Amino acid sequence: MNRQPNFLMQPIVLAGGKSSRMGQNKSFVLLGGMPLIEAVLGKIRSMFSLPPLLVTNSPELYSYLGLTMIGDVIQGKGPLGGIHTGLTHSQITYNFIFACDMPFIQANFVQYMMESFQGEDVLMPCYNGVQPLHAIYAKGCLPFIEEALQQDKRKIIDFLPQVRTRYLDTAEILKIPAAEQSFININNPQELERARSL
Image 1 (spheres, rainbow, N blue to C red):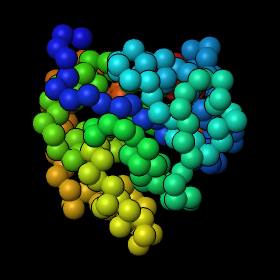
Image 2: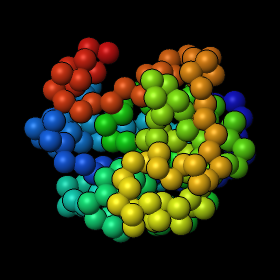
Image 3: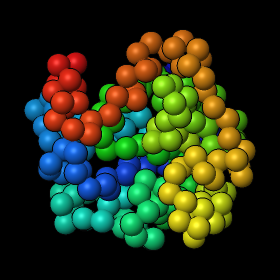
Image 4: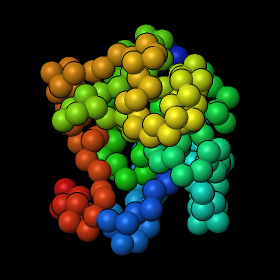
């Protein structure tokens, strides 16, 4: 990594979800000989000065990781509820949200995002659609997320028009070697096998 980011950032990992398509808790399927959650955390820990916060409603499963764990403030609201929980508990203004099922995090792309961040409320990649679980969020998003959740709007994109959002488009993303691998996620056994082949 060549330069220091302009803003201190808190990494937050969402380890929620029912894993219904996987048939088992996908956090603990093996990738590269280790549980998926450990593969993700291993990369994130090397990229940030602050330890990750882990959003989970099953803290007993993850206690061995030695992280601060936080349960959903508002239950049953999906990833947007997880983002809300992470931002609520974070002590830092700017937060980098990651999903536990996206293990091919690229350090050079994370660094690029942090260095190019200009203090928006949200900085989000757009590659084959928006990528809200590999994005930077400010705590200032909280009132707008809460409003969306109160109206039972669970799509992350629902609140974005209400805040200062900047998107990284595909052309910009592809300038960073292997950046597109960041968005490979693992939801079912077929995707797990593909990930293992990579």
